[in-house]
Every structure is written in C-alpha cells, then in structure tokens.
Length: 229
Image (cartoon, rainbow, N blue to C red; front, side):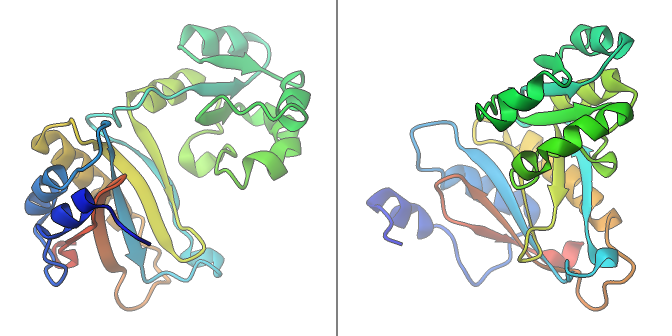
C-alpha cells in the first residue's frame, strides 16, 4: 500500500520499535492525524484467544465515559407498549414484521445499532444473514436483547460500544475522535481496556494481550505497552 507524503511525515514521529505508555500513545495519535476531517481514533487489540473455541470467545459492550463523538442511529424491534417506550427513549426507528422486507429486499440499513425485545427475536432471526455479517445482530451479551429498551437506547446514545473478536482474534473498536482532548481519549481508552481485561476468558493460557495499537482512520499505528494490563 502506497502512502502519501503527509502520512510519511506523520509516520516519522512514531518509533515502531517502542511500546508507548497510554498517555504518550494518545498524544502521538492526535499529533499524527493527517486527514482534513475529524478522524476516528481506533484501538486494535491482538489477543491470545482462539476464537474457534466457544470458551475463548470474547463479546461484550462498554459505555465510553465521553462517548464516541458519533451520532448513533438506533433501530428497535418491539411490540405492544414497548413501541411507545422505545420512541420516548429516542430510538430513531421502531418496528416489527413490516421492517423485514425493507431490510431484506430493499437493502435498507440506515442504522448503526439494532435493539430487540426477547419476544421479537423470532422475527429478527429471519434477518440473520443480513445483520450477522455486518455485526448488527442483537445479542444479550451486548445488552441489545432486553426488555429494558430505555436503558439500552440511553446507553447506546451515551457512547456504548460493542467489542468482539474478529476471525483473526483481533478486537477493533473506536474510542473517540481526534477533536477530543487527550484526557477524554485517555478516559475512554482506560474504560475499554478495563472491560477487555475483565472479559478475559478463563480458558486462555499464556499471554492474553499480544499487542495494542492506537491509530486514527488515516494515520500511522502507535503501539501501546501491553505490560500495563
């Protein structure tokens, strides 16, 4: 992959052989942001898990204290009085069976998170092939299958993010925007790391966190010292 001049200049500020202290890493990531837009700050965590084994899977959610800096659109599958509750809590879209053809046939995906009440999972299950690969399927572990739709929506709007292993056993999550000050980014990063460390599966032997990299959407990666965790 060929990088532009700005990226190459920014990359010179990062010593690839060093694992930085989290505070230094956050400062560097802000300094090496090269894009003209407000880039997302992302964390990529390579774990020692083997996701092929169910007992080594990691999936959960954490509310970032300072939010993600992104406006999140929430779709809620509900029926009965839960429809009014979801609307009152600020859901962007609320519905049931009638949304299935819209998503399946028309390819409507104008939402970032899907919440469902347990009694609607039979309906939502029919969308597994569409929502699953996009990481949008509601899940009890992530708090998105629940009767308490108000709490679910409030948490998501406040900056709740979901984390899970990908096929290479890496976790990729946003922790804010470049425009955030260093303290806010650091607090979000700390909240995420605390949740990930707690989520360590008992079945994982040896080193749990193999590498932690902080990066912006377009900037170079900055390695964070794993020894702290």
